[in-house]
Image (cartoon, rainbow, N blue to C red; front, top):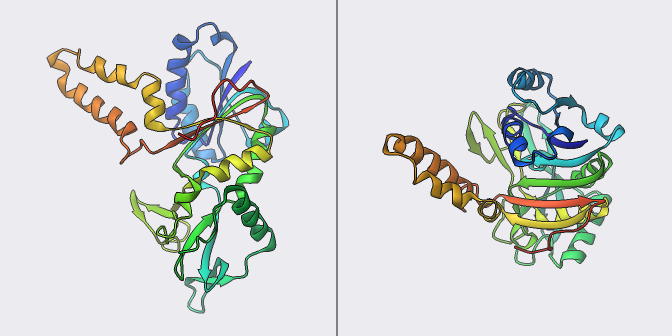
Length: 303
């Protein structure tokens, strides 16, 4: 069996697309394929099950992340906009010292930021990372109050992911930056963002419990934690570059061949496809490919 595992599948859009696309793309493997959804929210799981009921001939099943580690599969793990939602430590520069930004409850029952000493384990991780990448955190030119994020939870997640596969690949698709850009002195507020009712914001303490909170990934940090968990880095690409290599240009060209009666639909489709490769939109998404127990058929790159 070859398993395609979607971790945190949301509304199930990706699985629906895979269910329709995989049989004609790889008919020689279709009898061995299964789609696996790892969903921790019972309400979302019910919605996914209703949507996928009777939709595909490819077997579909749901399991927990812990179950997948107890009974690992062979295939592909897809982490699409997943790792940017993992917990992060918030770092802040005070004088010449790097401190941990914490949250406290005030006497009037509101939340406010405070500083604390950096835990020894986090300080050690940062020092090792700085030595590995020659990237100082904080950067030398950083001003007072410079802040950023540290992804301690990545290490544990990568180990869990390696336990979920007997062999195969991990595809991470997310907003990510190189360490030199991530920990740049001019990026003084880090990458932490919030979303509330479809609006972006910068205050994670507003509307407690109701915000989606996200932070970009640091590419070198993802690669280092993956390597420590036994993964081999096979390739990394910007989404625009990856999709063009996979045939997006041909799809755009095909839209020009549609009859005039379908012009409106063709223009809408063209706009949607271009947004996927636009550097100002989703084209800056990064695709990071890792392998476990498989041959490195792709060249390592710094593209």
